[in-house]
Length: 315
Image (cartoon, rainbow, N blue to C red; front, top):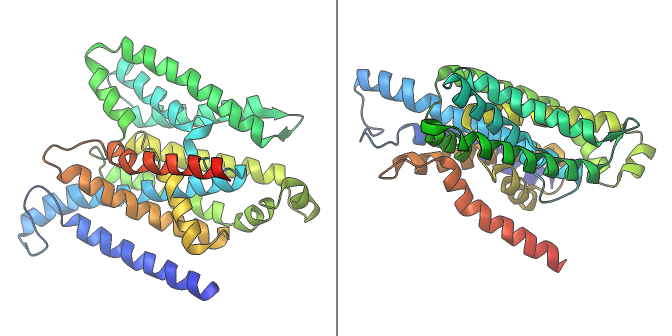
């Protein structure tokens, strides 16, 4: 199993490097990999395509890693970063910046909104210093619904800014520049922190009581992993808007390939999430009219979610 995991992770890494190279050379301008015009290489590839492809890789990496952690932490196959309100909070922050400040500081407000909503859900769920997984999930759903109502109100009063808010809620990578990529570099750093708790996640999969008997500080682990996942999701939402289903489907697919061990599942999900979003964005930007990448991920994510629901019902 170890040998198979090493081979699979190595193949994923090589495929990711190849995908970054190929996706950077694909676009609607007609520039191909065989074009060597220096000015075009500088302006189109280095200033436009490469930051977008790298941004997609980092955002997809973060969403998949956060989804993997959420599913392991909640022991729920349908958990993802948005179930505890992170996405809704980020959308509220971005919408507020668009409506009241004309889009000024949209990244900062989206990040603050995503972080604040996660802290709110955690504060509502904690009792006597302990957090029940079921209570946390229910609080997340309730806060998400409330924030969705607030977002609807902001869209109602947005006037001419409505289209900008709608595009943000659908998710997109057209605004990514090198500054966004530099910000997104915080994602792999946070993923490294998450990876250090992969052994604890494996033990907690046996149940919290068993994990405590085996020496795992479950409450501390939950707090750290929740904050790290929220931080990753907040960075991703502030850069690319609300891109759904990456954190839901990628960990499932990689679990069938690599098994349930989080020591290989987390890095595998990170690379697969990066691959998925790179190619989803490549499809989105090479269509006759560019569409938000969230629409592309929803096209295959929604059927997969229904499949999970039916499979869970049968079991």
